[in-house]
Length: 299
Image 1: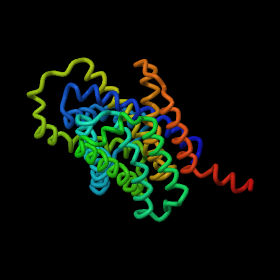
Image 2: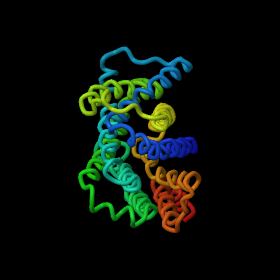
Image 3: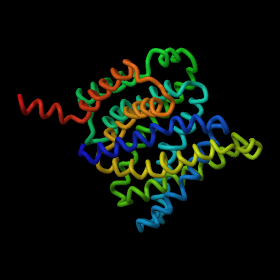
Image 4: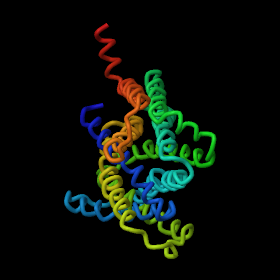
């Protein structure tokens, strides 16, 4: 991957890593499906404005919108419903561990569903190092939660599988000529439309108490930064780095959570977290492959 690709991965890790805290704030005020719809609906206007500024357009043919709807279901609707519900049952730390299995699914899915992203021993070992780093960084306390909330954990794992499948499916847009900004906007728009009846039927949001300022600030931040901007960057990354490489961002998300916790909540950076960062770095290096190639050349 190029330096630009790694820059996009770091930016996405910051945007999506901070979303975990904001989602937790949002779930204190509204049910999961309502929060998913609110996030998607509030993310549409910034994307449309960005499209206008960049001179981009949405597709007008039915086939493109059908593809965007499938992408929205795989990358937003299903995983968000499952993850948001799961986070009402398990801790944020445990959810981040489960989220880190996404690259593992991605390597496996890309191996079977693509011709040019076959798994190699180094990539498989790199994924395992990354997952081990996440587990070590979060610590034994979070892992002890694996004995409870079984259905919530299964839901989160299915969600990560959806993310992996979505990254594979999104490769279809490369031949369509659709710009990353148009894909991001179309995905968010179709997701908001799909989530509206789901939220209305499951949550009856009109009967809920009016959320306070903390909800709107948190949800607005998720919508603008962790959704509108993040998806725009994600589809650029997917276009240049491929499906399995794009999923590496999930390894960095817990690191962002640790840094934010230390900066804003006064949390201590523990030895476990430091060891986890080292394991994650090794995993990323193996998945990137350049260290191994340089080692082979020098030998």
